[in-house]
Length: 335
Image 1 (tube, one colour):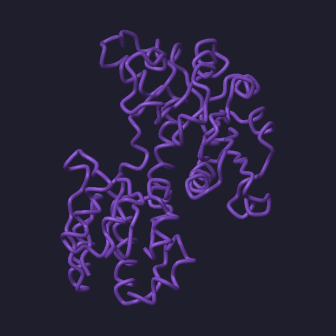
Image 2: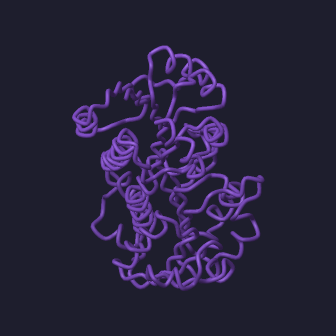
């Protein structure tokens, strides 16, 4: 079996593949800085005789699969599968595997970091000290007093793998953890020590609101101007999920007027962020460049998950993280 790996991948997992008799060609997109043309990629897969391809950021469409009739498996180093034509892969008998929860710990820990940074004004204080403005031992106590997480209420919107991990960390801080997710029942939430509440109640009572839900996909905001206005005065908003969840104009207004005391943001409408984005000029916002899952541990996790399923597939066993289960009958008959 030959596999082309276009994602960051651990050396340990590459060695494990080799030991299992799988030939892996590793060309991380982060090293080249470029994404593959889908059709040209398919032609390469066919010409070089690859049985499988593993991606993190590259797109795989029907034309990719048509150009690579010998392709048997696609691995995605993400939980979401919206960068590939899943229906086209299934129709052609191509197994699709993913890596659910691979960056849950990384994103959750950044979320807590942003909560702490916003609550204690860490970035602002760093600039204060570095700028040689600390000229009195008492001024910081008067002008930069923050708030603690312990004893406060955090509202988690979205109780998937990341939201549940955030709940674990917030519980460890002694916070009151409430959450909302239309796809999770109150009983399921209780199992991860989260009190399930309606969205309106969450916004009205939470001192911290953190987003871990997918966007609606229809252009509507989960937190529009009306819902931001309904939030508890002085609350802190953290968004490590999607810029499409929040009306940025309303958010900027709420931060500028003091309706919200602070925010921590890891995602933006454009990457890199537009230099004219008004969030850049607000002192009560902590900004990071979309690095929620940017940890070595994330790479180790998705490498191990993909490697395990590649080895299983090579043994004609069904992969653990197979997405298109309905195609297995066709796939197993020709592997």
